[in-house]
Image (cartoon, rainbow, N blue to C red; front, side, top):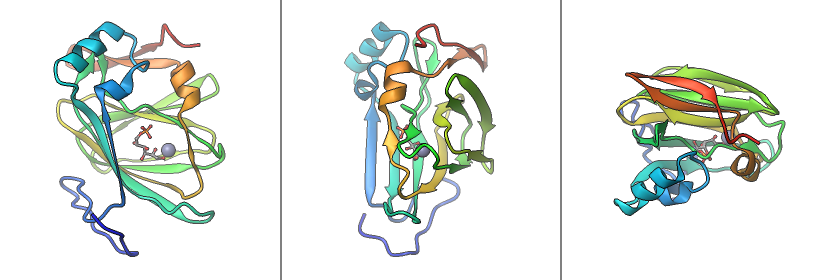
Length: 187
Ligand code: S6P
Ligand code: ZN
């Protein structure tokens, strides 16, 4: 790791960035309050507190700049709900984002007020997250789900709104696939 210049390299098979400036690791214990089955989460924390996801980012925080980062979201479930990111609105709500799938498979769940939509993602998928839409990624496969995200440098991250209200839908394991159902805890 080190300060990067304007050039970087991504291994398109693994998603590993040659250079990054920020690394965020979210373990099960960082996800309290995000899953419906709190007991299952506590059990997971006790059994070794696994990493749910990691983000390797190159932030450029000024107005007019672009930041980017790779997320590695591991496979697994908590009480039937797939491993997922916390999810956020951008602090500046009118800031959009682009997601590019690199490896594995997942969903990008988006929400604007009470309206929800989602897109399936895999290697090569490009999803545009419009301004004003909160976004959360979910690993619906059995290997790492890896994607690159590119977003305005001054977007900022509002985690509080989602932490408090949740998303209107949750994604659960169903047979070999997934089901998107109403979130019984949605406020
Ligand atoms: C940033 C972008 C992603 C997420 C990352 C982790 O705007 O959407 O890089 O930060 O996937 O998710 P979260 O919700 O914990 O930031
Ligand atoms: Zn974002």
